[in-house]
Length: 212
Image 1 (cartoon, rainbow, N blue to C red):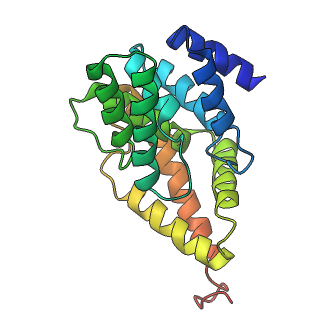
Image 2 (image 1 turned 180 degrees about the vertical axis):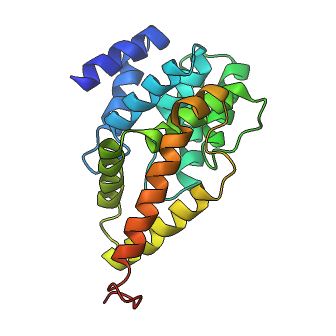
């Protein structure tokens, strides 16, 4: 099971804290987390390893970065960082390492770390790696995101998603690290371009008029 594999990874990252790892996985496994669930956590950790991630504070940042998730960007990450600070302090980590984990979590609010901030670059690139997935997996991730916004009508979702895609497409680069750009930039651009086209088609009746 994914959760069993993740718990083994957690125990290797922070030995002696299996109960904390179990609590984190319980939060990530909430059925309402159609996208931001254990699958996303596993994907982030896998992408991070591919980027050459080795430092414990980066792995811990990924474990905590979406721990609190209520579809409130910025607020969720800050709340997650606060939980991380409390839990990791209680686990006996030093002040500097806890502060670095918090800093890395907060970097995922806008995914725009400084070019020379390789630690935050790896964390942010791992979080965005899904953008460069093969098309079928990318589409599945968008559908999962849609399911998390079930309170929105289709028209409201299209407007929300168009803003998200437009913001991403406007970025000079989606990924901070050289490896991230090499691995995922081109595919991510293609996925976003195709999604933009689909959103545009869905928002019209074929004659340019808004869909009802």
